[in-house]
Length: 208
Image (tube, rainbow, N blue to C red):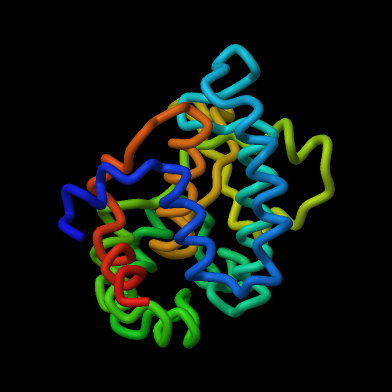
């Protein structure tokens, strides 16, 4: 299939195909149940949907997917603070860490390296420039649900006056980014995958 044909494939089909390549069959039903909740709100921006498709249904779906990724050792279970050690947890220090740790890629797992070698080898450049956080706001969801914010890699973004703007998620890896994009596209009623990001993980998925 040509790249143009791949782009024209319905976005929901792309998401389901990706899930079926990443997880074993016994994991699919729960994901598809949560996907149905997203479908019910598809295209309804008035139902509390953020700019990048974040609402209770998309957040719940992606948190569950990340939980499975954690169980499958595809993402880290280590809090962000542990990576940058004694330095304050800021975006600047996180980006410095990613660049300085680029050779060892310690935030990526051995399983991720084995399953997605092209994406793995694209670090740290792809993490520094192509993607970083999802732009979603988990504040309300976190108020209503018990979550380990450190393990989930939540980060509080503030304006120049120090006021909280949003509580977003720092991507674990390119697969996390790509799946989040697909969920956003489904929620906001996009028809095809026009994303220019995630080029490396798409190559890995194509090889599966």
